[in-house]
Image 1 (cartoon, helix red, strand yellow):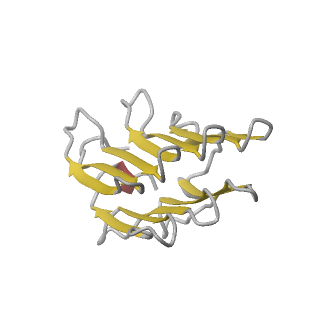
Image 2 (image 1 turned 60 degrees about the vertical axis):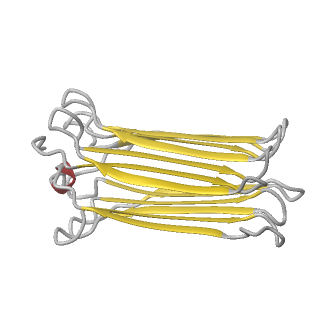
Length: 237
């Protein structure tokens, strides 16, 4: 696994407020690291406020350790508060073991509280792939409804790609309903292209609808980031 090049670091932050001080913000940029630093670093944070009491936060970051540590580390946490009582948290981290173990290990934990009596927890561990299989494929979907028809859905699964396909595929979708008129959707997916294209492609879509009377009833942000990365992503097949 080559450690000679360190081409891209991506930073993306989105702040969306949909109240009297409605303010959509988007900041994204690439940064070059040195060889002594990380090959690829990704930080993603999304802050969504529907009103003064409702806040949704998503923070994700990948960090590269030294060769004696992990090649890739991913931490993902989501805090969702519908009112003073409901809280939803998602924490996930990927850790790379030694070569005799798996290339990537994924740990997921979900703590979902709809009210003081409702609690849903999910904890999942690591899986080892063979060289003939894919390094990592992750599909995650979360549907959260917090009104009189409170509903929480979670669907997650791993998929194996062939060498002719992508090394890494990530699809993330979150549907959040605060009441019958408020809806927040987030859809993100990373896809690996061919060598002639980008090694990593990131697509993020956010849809926010407060009510029919709100001027910004729909905020639709589509981001397509294609980064040519000449790092270990092309060598771990």
